[in-house]
Image 1 (cartoon, one colour):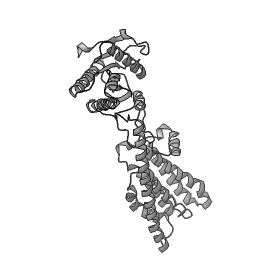
Image 2 (cartoon, rainbow, N blue to C red; image 1 turned 30 degrees about the vertical axis):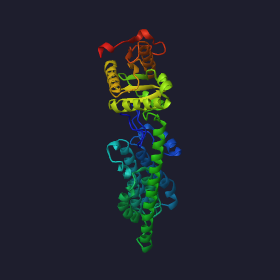
Image 3 (cartoon, helix red, strand yellow; image 1 turned 180 degrees about the horizontal axis):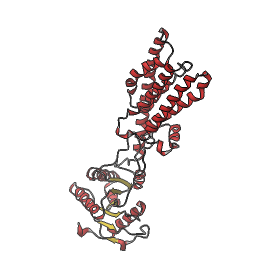
Image 4 (cartoon, rainbow, N blue to C red; image 1 turned 60 degrees about the vertical axis):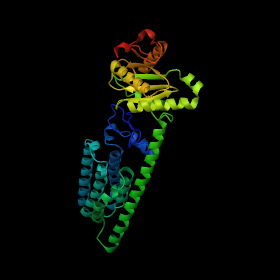
Length: 377
């Protein structure tokens, strides 16, 4: 089956959502902060958003504290130039195609901060050396938001920029540079490893929360999230294993569980790439068939029935399907497909019935709105 992977750097996107969601591993304070960022500035993913925040935070701290250093006229001009360059970078970051580039591309943000610090160090008299602690903040950003080992690529640029931003080059400065360089790498790599472990643990939790433990396909919670993304032309199919209670009573619950596992595996293996299956509850399963329409959807179900039969399925299954249109919600389609399923049950089981798409789908759907398409297949 072609379920979208639950494990990943970001949660699945909803159509119409132009920016990736905040990843599940992010701490609550970060998730809350990014959620309040205007949508225009959330493009590019959490690493880009945090990179913009890095520029803003360092710039704001410099602006609030630089006056304590009594900068001269020349220093103020340099500061103004650096601020203008930062504004240009911020503006450009909102239109650049970050999603097409390497995950390491946001390294431009800490690099820009360090270049700005070097310019202040060489171009000013009173400000030089005052803000070199920001280099640590840059490597913290790299460790938390960029892939592991990115810090090693940043270090060759960071060392000369650090020396430029410092005071006169003296033996103590050289020794300090060696020490802080090792500290930067250590901090960045430790944070990267911690972030990776937290990400992996969060991914496992998300996957377990959205997977049926018996059949290993989607569960009801995952199904509900995916149904909101259905569009007109998609089809909802409800499948139910025939006489499953009798199977449980005569051959035992362990055998019934094995049948459910085999049916879930069959769906996972033989559905089309863009389609989806979930266990709805008990012996009921729901399929979401994208861009199929009623006829092709019933063809898919019949091929699944043939595959199940050829594989020696212990029992047959009945199915009902309903296709969304412009006036039909996904929930209404699910109710209509369920009504079509019970029509199939009444008509002898081991068949598929389709509910006609019509305005007013919902609990009022009855047997007279169900059309037998078995002879058209």
